[in-house]
Image (tube, rainbow, N blue to C red; front, side, top):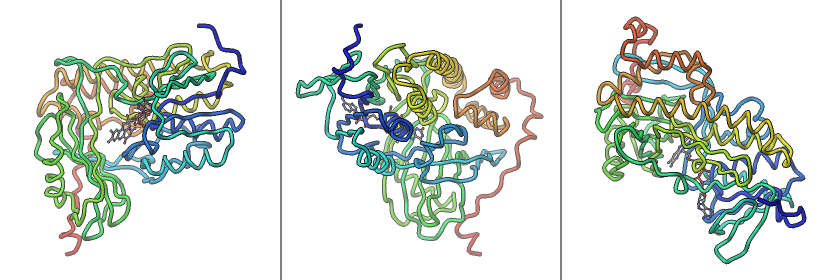
Amino acid sequence: MAQPTPNAFDADYLLVGGGLQNGLILLALAARKPNASVLLLEQGEVIGGNHIWSFQAQDLPETALDWARPIIEYEWPGYQLYFDDSARWVQGAYRSLSSEHLHRLVMDAAAGSERIDVRLGTAVSGVDGHSVGLADGTRLRARVVVDARGPEAARPMGGGRFSGGYQKFVGLECRLTTPTHLTAPILMDSRCTQRDGFRFHYVLPFAPDRVLIEDTYFSNAPDLDVDALRRDIVAEAPRLGLQVAEVLRTEVGVLPMPAWSHFRAPDASPVTGGYAGGWFNPGTGYSLAAAARLAEHLSAVPVADTFGPEWHRLTRGMRIQSHFLAFLNLLMFGFFHGAKRRRLMERFYMVSDPVIHRFFAMRNNPIDMWRIMYVGAPWTPKGWAKRAERPVEVQTAASSAE
Ligand SMILES: Cc1cc2nc3c(=O)[nH]c(=O)nc-3n(C[C@H](O)[C@H](O)[C@H](O)COP(=O)(O)OP(=O)(O)OC[C@H]3O[C@@H](n4cnc5c(N)ncnc54)[C@H](O)[C@@H]3O)c2cc1C
């Protein structure tokens, strides 16, 4: 396709969709390329929707912290896991940010620069090469267009046993009646009634009297009875030592965990970023690590070199990781059901902390891949289980008051 002449461009970077992906890209460009012109178009009235995004130690590499540090709204030194027969602590920063926080950062960046323009309430009707069409017929052009219109714009996963599954959850941000003793997240507590695949609770303690409690499933089906799960979370919270006084906010997620990689990375504009382009971890359904890597790339290379050698290195690595992680979904959702899936998850978390961090960050090396396959395999020696610590009882509010 012929490139428009430079003076025909409305911006250097045109970001379609104001979600996690383009929010991160805008922040990275604002910090690293203050002279670049950036235009972000979002159909809604806020950036980022209604989410809490969590991420692990290596999801934001050290090299990205110069621009990405402000996104860290909450930080803990690690997290805890509980299974029926074992428990463990994983050491390494665990962090979260809310949509509201991302919205504030993006709007502040736009307010602080004449080169950055954020247009809310602006729906895009089509994207083609360097050009974007708006619903009112306006056409805008940019040197690089990043189309990140989110999961709705992603390729459908298909159906059947070998298409993968879902990480689905209902999360309640709650005010507690009594302060919690928790000072770090519980990433998984599967000591609950098992149903609909592998089920566990996830807890983020934002403050002594405010937590997020999620009821999560690694399931083959996307259906979710939100009202029933809301009631279950409140009823089961005391098992986690949490007494809910008030539900402040509800979030619902059905994150596809496909058995086949959706990663797409053509060598020309538009870049399909975020979930729609497969810039997410198929093994977790989470996308911050991959989204940050795309933001890091776009802010590190000159706009003319966007699709140069660094791009090929990045996308080749992402493609390998994405295929490997999707293959794990093929195995888990295709062959491990009921108690087998629970056991598989427990075995996975026997690997060392660095292997876990690289798994989440989509930076598995060949030895990690072998280890993950090995601990997940049914022929794993039982002796490996010895590496898991014994469960540490979660202190209940009642017991801590004794
Ligand atoms: C409840 C929930 C919790 C999650 N938790 C985590 C987590 O803890 N960690 C993690 O890494 N991932 C998490 N994920 C997954 C990840 O957050 C999402 O996949 C991520 O938001 C994807 O980023 P994105 O920018 O591709 O899409 P989105 O963040 O969904 O953004 C897409 C944006 O594009 C806009 N848009 C769509 N169409 C148009 C159009 N035609 N014109 C203009 N704008 C348009 C939308 O309004 C939206 O704002 C979670 C997802 C959900 C649903």
